Image 1 (tube, helix red, strand yellow):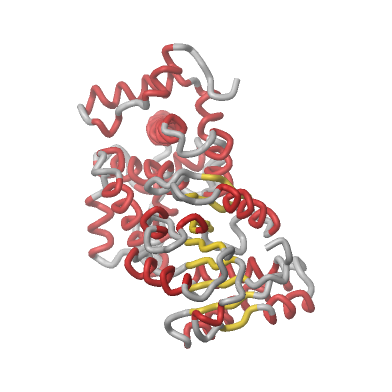
Image 2 (cartoon, rainbow, N blue to C red):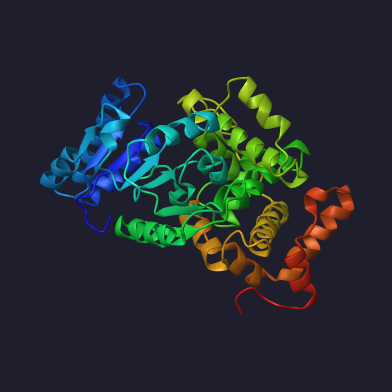
Amino acid sequence: MENAKVNVGIIGSGTMGSGIAQVAAAAGHDVLMYDIHPEAISGAQKSIAASVQKLVEKNKISKEEGSALQSRIRPAGEVKNMAECGLIIEAIAEDAVLKKKIFRDIEKFVPADCILASNTSSISITSIASACRNPQRVMGIHFFNPAALMPLVEIIPGPETDYKILDHSKKIMGQWGKIPVVAKDTPGFIVNRIARPFYGEALRLLEEGIADAATIDYAMIDRGGFKMGPFELMDFIGNDINYAVTETVWRQMFFDPRYKPSLTQLRMVESGKLGRKSGKGYFDYSNHTAQKDPVKNPELHEKIFLRILSMLINEAAEALYYRIASKEDIELAMTKGVNYPKGLLKWADEIGISRVYDQLFSLQMEYGEERYRPSVLLNKMAKGNKNFFT
């Protein structure tokens, strides 16, 4: 993989697969794409062409560079045609059975030193690697959507992953212009685990009648500096996708109440209110419908902001306590993966860890729920009057 001409294989030609293919081709690699539905490759090539055209129009790349990039992406036809690839990234649907089958099939044809990676956001890398004869070369390389634009990549080794391959993969992602962070193979990895309260606690506030969606969003944008509020972001992601990720993390965390899905969001999915893609979610996206104005109440905004932020900080502290990632990678993941205005651990230092702990303890006493239990690490730091970084 040191040579930019070494082939990269992409399995799956959907939004993520085509985006990753574009990134690899932009870095100078010849890319082979395979999809179980051959006609899907054509759609992926059109999507890549449209994305490249936008870059040309914005003068990010020249027309010649755009043409050369597209010429480096070719259909594989069959999996066995990826026999010369040095890196293969699987980006198919989140189905563990299908992923294991693909990895078993690939392993029959590729050389022994080919790195096999999954772009999964929710399935255990350990589980996927168990299907392979050589699990040492299997790992997770999780891109964020849109892959061509989002800088963060989570790199997830399984318990048997060769750490030389881990280091090599980090180097490759750096060469591709990405920011790699390393995560332990646990549910949600870094971003999808730590970010759960941004949605979950916002939904809880809505269900309790403390504020409506517009006001909660306004509080997080105006008071917190977030680029999008939780309800606008859920509508952007798709309520079906957001709910599925939450349910997966909750189930894989043995039904820990911290990650419990919202019945409100389930009903949104069941009613077809998926967000922007369906025209209606928590907000109405038809041109003729005015959005509801938020309640302008600074005291309420502060209450909303502190409650959601405290839950986010608690998750970041818990991830650090259980060594899901280093504190530096946790900060990078949340600022570069979901565009948070600040790293959560530094944010805790700024507003005071004791204040965060007191907020969580107060909520736990009020509701009597384990959902609000403070992290062991947060507890220790609050009592010791310590900070994460200073």
